[in-house]
Image (cartoon, rainbow, N blue to C red; front, side, top):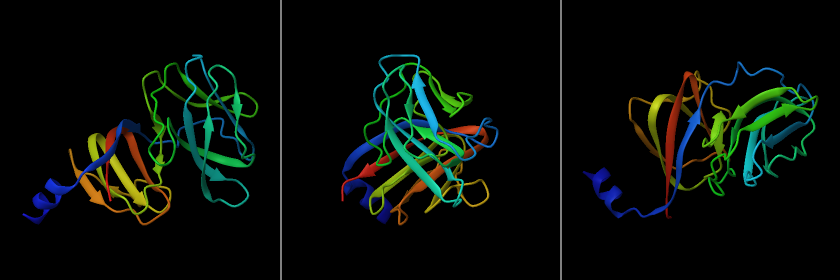
Length: 194
């Protein structure tokens, strides 16, 4: 009963729409100690893109948000990426979200493709969000979804979602991350006003 009362009085601040997560381990052409580059085949892709991965010299999990410039190539400021684990068409606060108009392509410094985001999609691979201290609900829509608060999610360390499960929590880590297995998953997040 307390759950229903709490739900009734919460006010939605914003909703992070449906996005895809999937396993990233099959991605080839990882940078292995270099920068990465991103571009679109559409001039209309001029929004934010956040890249998640690890740093080669430290092994630390990190992210960088860049602003797309359509078909022009954007190179990350970080020049020591090891493995890229995911991409998200927005910032880590779940804002400035715009679905891909064209196909977004991420390459290593030599120009070999690591992964892509398809037209109309918001993400690929692992997705991380910085919603520390916010009241959020993560909703599993399809597939096998795993959540980890405070680092990079794996199918081993992440909280496993059941079918159509809603998970309500207040993140304590700087980033909580979502990933799927080979099945891929679709989810959305509701952020409530404090």
